[in-house]
Length: 212
Length: 212
Image 1 (cartoon, rainbow over the protein chains, first blue to last red):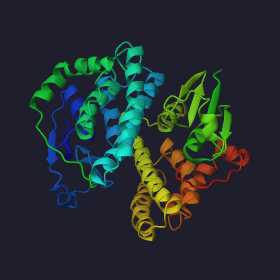
Image 2: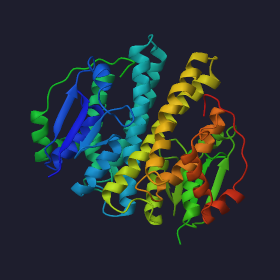
Image 3: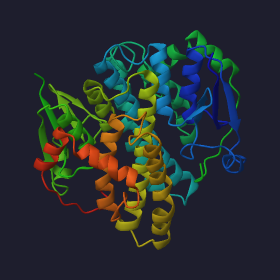
Image 4: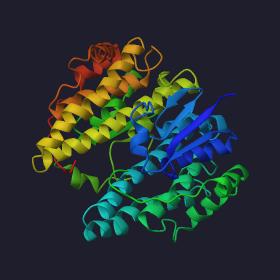
């Protein structure tokens, strides 16, 4: 049996979709977590392939890139599309989330960590967030409650695993007034393996700084 | 037969891996190109799924996300890995390029488009570029002249299609003193369908501004 070790900070963020998918697959994994303060020191002692986390070690092989890892696990779970076209639509959806994440991150760092920028924050709240979130909401509305082709895929799990942390960091409820996404979240969190993961996952606290 | 229309600026950049792969597959495509100056106006008239280009239209369906599109085309070309593990390694490699691209872009915009920042430029040249490029060089050295498992994959084509534009924009030869990557580039450009594409692709000129 393969041995899985996941290394990340003690936050959901980029590691949480991996944790959700490993849980979905009922794969035991070592969930190694560091606090933000200790990470700069610990980092120098771990042979990270490209200097970044999360990394998932499978049988001693150190893998970076959380999206690629999620796609790999999703294939094992039968959640990566039933043909190449469907896989394409799922991949596009996940990369759209990642674009939102990048944009979100840039704004959050600007808004909270540097000098106060009320104009930027207004753009963030009134333009960036609705631009992406309304598209996500509509897509789920048009696809029978899921992101792609009216059935569960890793795009759904990825989104639900990561979105609450965005809300937390941005101090804004991204699912407010978006009933399709709320219903999707509810469905995903009711999957027994995910539900069980949520019950046992550790608590965290997190402060945004320009270093993380 | 499916109809393919690719929309982008008149530059290689993110569209070029798609153009390389369509050419490799000998798929005819309409190569729609706009100059940077006209794009802001044109943009409002095209129903872009997430406001960004490139987009590839296949039989009327408008697709964004260049990496996802490349993966889809690569499966058709038999270049996406012979098993799930190999596909994972290819996906990780491509996402590492994309991380480099993001970092590169941030630095280039900082360095050329805003006030002069000599310290940042020094970090960019002396730290960021070697950090990524030396890893790429070594990986190809360790894998018999390719990025993954000693054989041609879409990671190789993606890299070669995009890297010259990075060098052009950064005004630095990223392959200098990196013989493994130089040899890889040579091999890819000698593939008959790619060679034929290179011969016929249009010339371009490009100025970096903070808008693009």
